[in-house]
Image 1 (cartoon, rainbow, N blue to C red):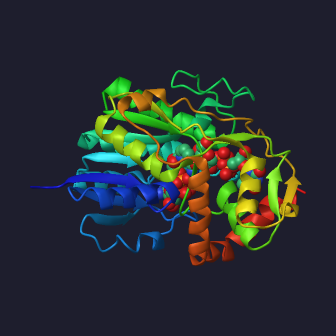
Image 2 (cartoon, rainbow, N blue to C red):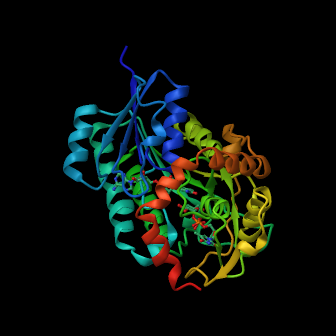
Image 3 (tube, protein in one colour):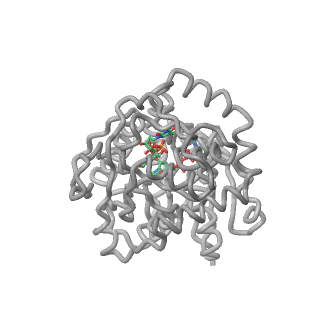
Length: 341
Ligand code: NAD
Ligand code: DAU
């Protein structure tokens, strides 16, 4: 019997990478195709343990390259698409928005056209809570699937645009889709430009940790493996055309997160450096995951155990992140933070 083919875009990145490993190890009955352009955020060394497995395949391609993507879909006739590939860092979208439109909007449209032509069984579009904009510091308010889209950064605007295209392909062409909107992820292989891995790597190296503004902004942290199980469930059980929010009620201020990491690593809070705020910095994100819970999802990590394990993972895998921060990253860091102080 032919195995079903699942195309995972962005499977060399943080969440897509964790998802590829989760799926390859969990389901021998599927062939998992990891399609990735290997931008600065893509890295295949993380897959050394699965790359020899029969059900894992890698394809280097740009999702916005229409000719290659159409050709690939015609040849492979994928059954499912789980679409993670994106430019994902808000700060980079503030300095260089164009690539975010190219990859996140144009790339998604190319994939939708290809999925429509071969008639996939389902297209899962992995989106973000940032499309809803920001919440006030009022602990009783949450993003639900009904919250209007009000993106504030070029990144979230590009993700919201792609969400609308995905929705339109369902309404117009009946392409079988789901959209997931998740809160901030953390865990193994998180690229060290993002707050948690940036803080861990800098505290380990006893370097200053840049905290934007007064550090009071709130994010709702979810362990990446809980995100993977949510997408697995939506892929198999999600009702066609529906949006599902993903989050586990783990709200923390940025300052709380940074202090937790410093304390766990036994270092001094003098490492904290308050720097100029991010432009258009969203105050608070918080997810109401009731709809997904009704589908049967339950997160397994709370923030305390998840962050402790994650810090330990970064201590055990210094080679991985030290290699990343020793290259191009140095230039990025200097440029990003030089005018901030
Ligand atoms: P990431 O930046 O770590 O990885 C993105 C991956 O996409 C990289 O491997 C990169 O090489 C690849 N890629 C970029 N442009 C491409 C192109 N044109 N063609 C093919 N591949 C390309 O991102 P992440 O944090 O793992 O996020 C994955 C997805 O999840 C994104 O769509 C993001 O919007 C969404 N998301 C992220 C979070 C989070 O907290 N990180 C939360 C919610 C949703
Ligand atoms: O909410 C989901 C989103 O979470 C995803 O869609 C994005 O792809 C992902 O990057 C993440 O976006 P954030 O902007 O929330 O994550 P980031 O790690 O960049 O920042 C988290 C918070 O920490 C935010 O309030 C900004 C702050 N921050 C960040 C950096 C990089 C700092 O204070 N200092 C920093 O140096």
